[in-house]
Image (cartoon, rainbow, N blue to C red; front, side):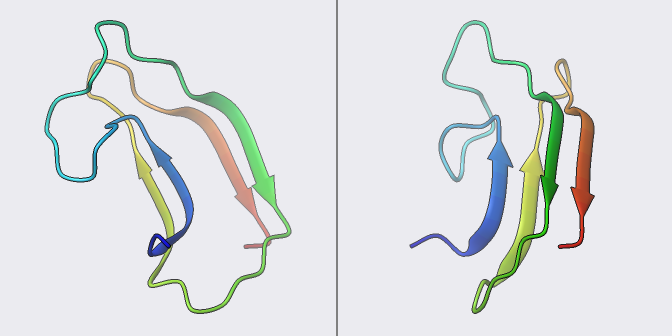
Length: 62
């Protein structure tokens, strides 16, 4: 099990500095709400790319 309750990660391996795709996907217009959890070391991890950052991500009642 991972340590994050919510994870959005454009780097496909945990410890890489380069994406594993020629054309990385776009993450945008995401809403996450009403989430409860226990024992996660990290509540939320989000990692975009410098050339394709994350856009319009909403976290509500987390």
